[in-house]
Image (cartoon, rainbow, N blue to C red; front, side, top):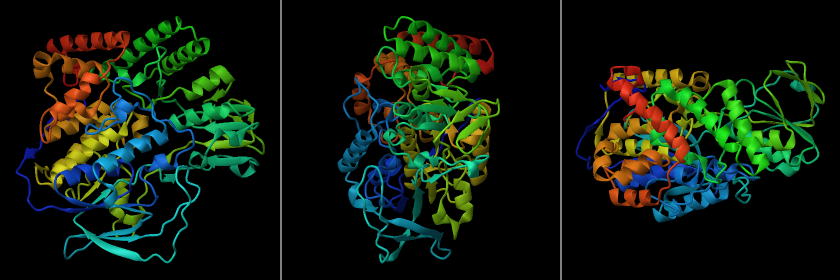
Length: 564
């Protein structure tokens, strides 16, 4: 069945000769998940047809607010088979820069001809006679007031068309249906209240008193940019904020260079201790910075993280420091209480008040799949909780026919590389090269994985259903398909590659070194350009990792490192 560990179940599937019969696959959505999936399926000889409601590829990054900047660096976000050539000097792409990357990828792999833009998938049903999937789509969808594309009028006379497929892949994304609670006293509030989905630019709030609800990554960025124009700002975080990591370090390097295998190979039991020691070290180093504001921001981040006693091992991440910058440099208020709205103010449980003219609610989104509702509500329901799927991707009732992509959400790390691993897994399954376990076994593995994530991340894992540890999740799929990097062999035969894998940013190039459809030459070329993490942070995490290894050798199993 597999090997149970403190990080769930590792299972390696049986490899088989490729099936000469190729499949025709429906792909719903035209964002980054759809692109990498199409590339993987097409490379194995399958045919695809993609349906996208927008007139441009890119999904959420076409719609997001004006000043969107990704929270993972270009190196961490890129796919293993497509490089921007700038690995030595990674940066944080703007939404438009990332769209340029995606468009170049689509052109390189000739994907545009498979995409039907301005098409809405209405229904999906399985034919009981043929076993095929019948998909009804309607063109002429149209779009209006979308940030990065021109308005296109809808065509109400466009016909509905029915198409037949062997498999259906859902790449519709997690940001299509906003979640906006009804706040206490909301009916009394006379100001403007919008979900972040409808937020566009900070200038719209010039001179206003603005409350931002939610301290996630969007909430943090939006707080920071609104605070530059508003008369006064406050942010309310109900509960603990995400573990805060700034995009850029004091030395000007991107911070996720330290999201590496050395750090996350440490056992979970060491996680919070590693986090605490690192925060002390960062706070100490910040004292030597010349930039007073940056010094104070970095010290405040350490204080906030240490106060709530969380780490990157046990808490979802907030991979930008926006709301902290707003607090330190522009006096933004931070509130942690429940609250009630009145005509022109918010009253918090501790009795404090904030007078406000506008509220931006950064309260997240729901996973909703209306195209399954009519004929397969059970699939729509299962899609709401990715934990019920095998490796949070493959729908267990129809494991070679239905899968979801992009719904596993790394606490730290990037979504597109996790989708690449999901896509490689499903493509090999569809191609007959991997034999899945029985449905009963897959349900058991999914259940054990869910227990692990909920133990690791607690409340966050129950709130964010797809929350995973980036390394453990990707390594799990890598072992399943037989592409896990041979670390011991690399240590002796190619120590430079081993060094970059262990102490450089965690990228999926390591899964192209061996196994099915490996491309070691390309992977090694990229690793030659890889920077490595900071010396101090690497030294701290390495010392914990070596300690864990010694303790595990002495028989203390709970200190066993993750694949080290």
